[in-house]
Image (tube, rainbow, N blue to C red; front, side):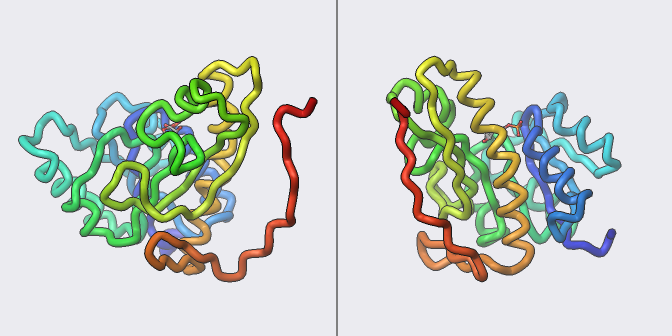
Length: 218
Ligand code: GRF
């Protein structure tokens, strides 16, 4: 068990995606284990989740650093010490700098609650509702220097219901996040992802059947 490759997960809040990753790892669905949970907030519930599974945690408070680069340099130091081969941002509410990105090239994943490139930034579900789209969803992507712009690994689609609130839509999206984040991690750790420019190809992926989905269904 313990010689499985280490994943570092960075959280700022609830950590339900972290939980999905831990659960998938404990069920043997991903060939790796969470070996570090790192947060910029001491009260992030994700840290308590890690504690319940005996996973080492660390807090690096961004407010104690004079620059984003200095904060990122500390993150890099802590992550390197964990031996992580993959870094997963899961509700980590800080924009990172090249100091962080260049330390782990093509080894940082992020999850976003919208079908990128639509609705990047914060409040993806609220933006989708305001815009009036009929479908939204979630995206796991490699991190690059932009905000939510990196090469896309997995996306899942969910319908937007006419009576949705931000909360109901976010909850429907979150359910899919919990499926696709462990999946993306599995593909990464199985060595099946190749990144060329913007495009990620997946070795051995089955072909999605053609489908036609309309919304509304009237
Ligand atoms: C998720 O919606 C994720 O897409 C976004 O932040 C939220 C984190 O939720 N980046 P949780 O902390 O994993 O519950």
